Image 1 (spheres, rainbow, N blue to C red):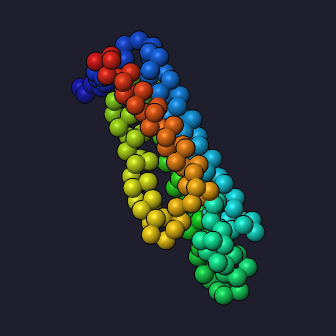
Image 2: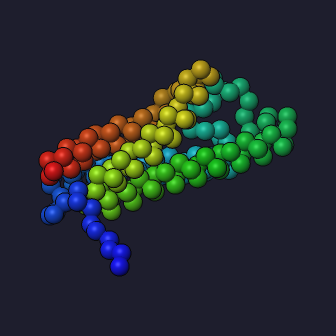
Length: 165
């Protein structure tokens, strides 16, 4: 008969201050990722259309000019906005659940997953912002803030996990 064993790295008791504070910060940052995705999604359906912090200094045309040039191109860009916002929100939700129900309970594997998911997303997405001057503070500032909060939280969480081993 097969048995399931518990994770030997799980905490035996309630989380300590570092783990509790760290997972709270990680969770807040994950909610920030979701919030950024919502902003991204909503702007797609407004006259703003372009992403937060992207304006005439970065792209000299707006929604109306894109539609005038090519309605099909407009629809294509719109579908990309919707898809990207969905993946950002999904990553934020996954990180939130991993953090709250895994890391907070002392599972090191959950911390690895919670950190790896946004790192992968940022490693793929961020480099394309710099050569095209899309790296404005208005565009990336909220993500940078969420990442800073997340890194502090992940560090505190790791400290809390390691102190229990």
